[in-house]
Length: 483
Length: 95
Image (cartoon, rainbow over all chains, first blue to last red; front, side, top):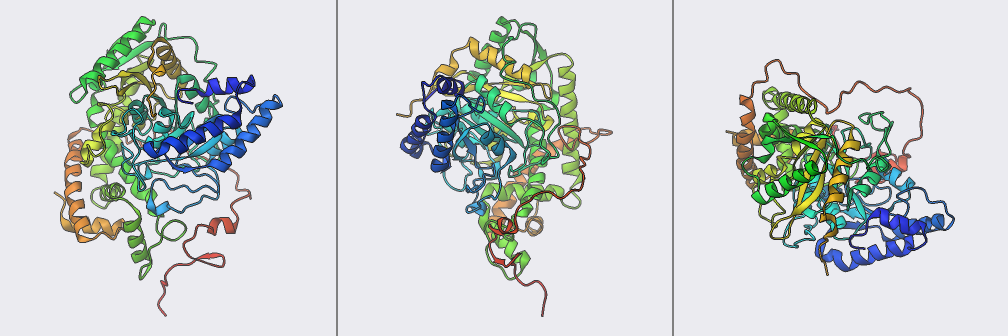
């Protein structure tokens, strides 16, 4: 299963060379044998997966598969509501929460015939960059079990990298899919804000949360995006714009494309090994026919500070719903307020409490304009800089992360952890689509990610360039050895 | 610099019953994070409109029609404490 893409699997299903049931069984067997090492999953949906695989098999036998994801075994970050299947968001406060409905993206995946293998580990409420903030256990990077897979969608990234799922979904709020994709040597795509419905996604920061796929290659990424993209009347922030056939649009290469390289993404703090790999990747894009030019995005250095006001502020409001009344943990108290205070103190972990406190402070009387108001204005400055850059170029190319996957416990200081997101945050704050695609390895054998950022709703150009780069380089064929 | 009283006030607003040690750790960590975030204050944003969402959004309207929704049992299935068709909470009205 290791290294087998969704498109290889479904082609083999259609030809009768592989069985969806046997394939689902093989992934479940790998999970049983290897996930104790990796810790990618919080819940394995064994019976549901096998039942869905039997249905897929019957459809292939009848020559009527549902589409390009029929029978594809995929994993979901435990942030997406799954009807009848526990959904924890990595938190004690939702440890026994069983959603009564499916997220829209889950409904769409089921309708497309995807086999849901289970729910993956994550930083609690998606707050973190290492998956060490899960209330349940850490996840290990399949390339080096002593290192983090990145986060917050680290379980999904590790599952795909380790051959414990053929593809997966996570969420990207400040880089939570692109960064773990880079750390785990897989492709991770944050689509344009509003491109994918968030109905049934447990909210963290509503102006920044994006549903985002992980895959072994760009063809699979295009396929996963196509399955979930599109307007949803249940999500007022989803955009009503037709969904292209992303996979059909992948060919065409980068000849004539103008690609900008922002100076500010190659400054101090960038690991020289990453700089070399990313600059070499940009050379590959030039050799393939793209025009490369320098651009400047001077407000980049303020991105992390801006994000760490906006995201905690929105989180403090979104997480107010966990009050011990309607669902989730309840710790008894002498009155409603006492009950809520005790419930939240017991149910939330340290990082979540820190962000709720930070966000509440930033929104509180006397501070709102200085913090949240100012951050929202800086966000406008960042947006204008991207608009100016995209008047000259079609795409931007940059590193995904300043460093490679770090050892567990290496970033105990919250600020050091936050600085990991410096290159991923700008596309989050502007809602622009961005993809991380493997572009090499460090001397120690750890994966490195190239980040491409595109114009709003232009995932087609973004994926086309990522595909052209991937086809011209050998990285996707190297896979970690889990034994 | 953020004071212990500020932290206690914010914890009350946030409905987080933190103990003394947690409050002190929180004060130290918030102090460090806020010092970093304060670098934003120096940026000139005079006359700049705030961005509240990543895409231009207008109000999204629909007809106010009856549609299927969660059953009462489904909606109450995760309740920590339930009484008939209600979420039960501690008494909030004095006798």
